[in-house]
Length: 70
Image (cartoon, rainbow, N blue to C red):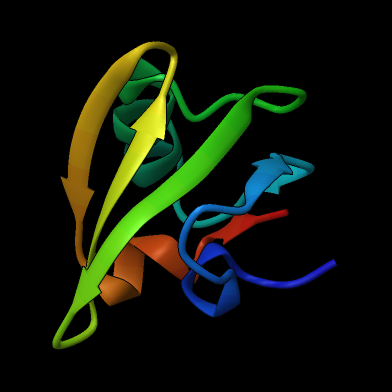
């Protein structure tokens, strides 16, 4: 298990758990980051990431990516 921020580009990963405060978890779950979901890193620029999750592209910061365990 490792944070999403450490996943290589183009590698599909299964989300194991979403951490953080309730508010943060709810925000990420609304974007589609739920346990058992598949997430793929599209690109990383300066710590920020663009990921594919549930057939949509989402940009998240490194702090958010560190809360998503895959």
